[in-house]
Image: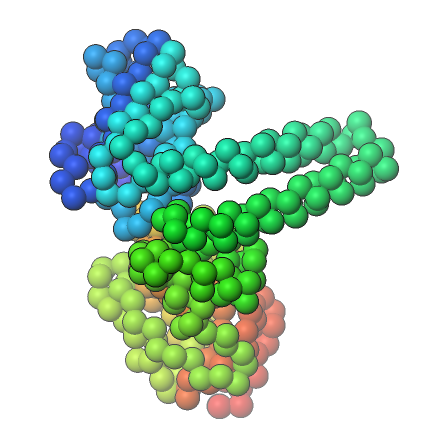
Length: 366
């Protein structure tokens, strides 16, 4: 099954570079200093993987796609040693790469690229300083405690400066389209109240774009759920596309589990949940697992590999999806144990604690 997904992904990547852009984005690039036939890749920074591959022909490469809002990508060579960040919306841009130096490539046709590059000019030197210090810490056996402490203090100082630079850039450039993405990406860093202040300063047309609406959802419609609260309904499609509501389980104890296939702790949790489900499902216990995957293939492969027999659903939007934003999910796995009336009776309960809790519940019922 895995090989089939790999083959399908390769075919889709190839086809994506041969279609017209239509109402999406299109990147037309030229590359000197390399022979025809080499591979150039488009890396999606939200998904953390390459999504397209283009074969150089007559010194040209091309990428095609569609984004919902301003998005960051990297265009890179096969070694990933040379790469260029591109800020995209649904428009056509051109890129000139001279002597295979992607980092110095010139991108034209995109106003948000200019905005993004202004941000990178400001922040990149700080990230490079931080990276250099992290490499020093990597040689831990060669460092004494005082030197480690000094390096860690320097890193903390840089981290503070990075946060301040982000804050000031968003505040000063409130009319830039990219600030809605930057603010959304850093909302946990700033905290909700500081994020709210910065959001209020953003121009109205920026608030109405894709990331501006995500920020509005986070600031004004997210849930701060605690034990004793009633869980609101969740309606999402399962792997077959059938919509399943968590309220359809009312009358039963339900574990609402947020997870992702790339989360190692989540995969470890699946092994325990198999035992829990096998022991207590006959007595009415249910699991409603919300996958925060981006790719259906990854989600499905994990279900098959881990023999998941309970219902799992997903909007395939990852941590940027409305469900993750509403529940303010910052880490995984995360769960809530719900009683038959929809009341949250435990949060982040797992392992032996979950087993003991269910044993107490169902022994009393019997």
